Image 1 (cartoon, helix red, strand yellow):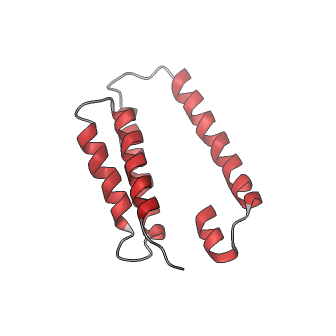
Image 2 (cartoon, rainbow, N blue to C red):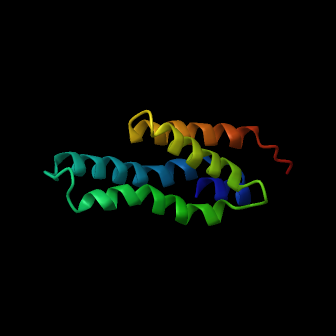
Length: 112
């Protein structure tokens, strides 16, 4: 939301803060709830927890598509995360994949 607004109206720290506070409350609240809930390791919510990041990315990707090079950071993240997940915990593989995708995005040349 913030990057779309910054593209339209320029950078605004107040918009970033205003859009981040509800997200942070939901994120921390959801994490606390999941930590406190007595869920079985192979219970029915395991599939939902596994699909949540994938569905989040699938809904976010169309709004981020700007030109032919737009999918490269996303693809880099996915490929690196899948490769790294064979060697480390899935949480770390998502973090490493996201970092690699961010690096590709930072190296991308954008002339406005």
